[in-house]
View (cartoon, rainbow, N blue to C red):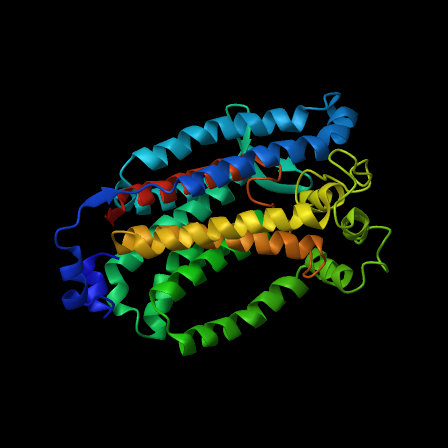
Amino acid sequence: MDRNERRAAGTVDENRIEPQRRGRKRISYFDYSLLFVIIFLICFGFLMMYSASSFSGTIQHEDSRYFLNKQLKASFIGVFFLIAGMVLNYNLLKKISVVFYGLSIVLVALVWSPIGLDLNGARRWISIGGMSFQPAECVKLAVIIATAHYISVNYKKLTNLVELVKAMGFGIFGTLWVGLVTKNMSSAIIIMGITFVMVFVASPMIKEFIIMFLALIPVGAAGIFFASFRAERFKVWLDPEKYASHGGFQVLQGLYAIGSGGIIGKGLGQSVQKLGYIPEAQNDYIFTIICEELGLVGAFAVIFMFMFIIFRMFVIANNAPNLFASMMVVGVMAHIAIQVVLNIAVVTNSIPNTGVTLPFISYGGTSVLFLMSEVGIVLGVSRSIRRIN
């Protein structure tokens, strides 16, 4: 938030702060620690992805590096978006926020056009220039930018339930659109979660948010039980051993992988469960391979790195020069945090399977591309921070 916004919120004491600033020099700031951890996590993801996918790549495509090569290509493109986010003025995003949001909605609709693709029994991708693309990932970024813009303009109005719902409008429509068109419940949940966190941070109206949360429970329950395959996943979650022959197979194999890794793991590349026991081990269940090969030590190291990323983004959001920048960082922080929590909760069978990838590590070109774009925006905001020396 800028000084005027903080003064309006009652968080700036000019008599206390200004004397401390007189005579001090303002120097530019850049969060190198966040950048280094992101780079390390991406490189670690390449290593674990090759370990998890080499067997299936050889069996399915006669190339042990098939999945790794595709991820490398997507990440190479993502580097340009990351650099662009760092270098360009993030305030430009405010001017194109509505247009970008509208474009993302159109891209989702294209999954039912001739360029839409059916993969793994779901129609959630489009093909552009011979490359598959999942437009739901674009909606996540568009919702972050559009909601941040709305909040920065209307933050003084966020004092009642009606205004809070209006602030969540981009996220609510994006959630319903992605859910109805692509049947991608996991992406819809993440979009709604991002929106909820952003508006909550902007206007901590606890009572109103409790009301909205309670109102969403029957909606979520209806979404589960009126779709037979989601109801089946709920049953598998409650008793995976009963459904071990079909729905519970992946869950049980993932738990076996986590348990067999022990404290220090079997060693890098020594996983047994990746040898056809865990379907698509390089995707949603890659955390189980990390646990099996690197043990609890490796698992906690990965969790610690994500916690560090969230902490650094919290610091950047708290020191951002204006409310728009701060809200964008909060949105990215919420996106990464929600995906990490959901992914780990799914593979440990703490919640029903929702098909959520582990950021920067799981296989998925569209996901890593947009995540790197979001990190670039956060680092661009960090460059705008002026530290007093």
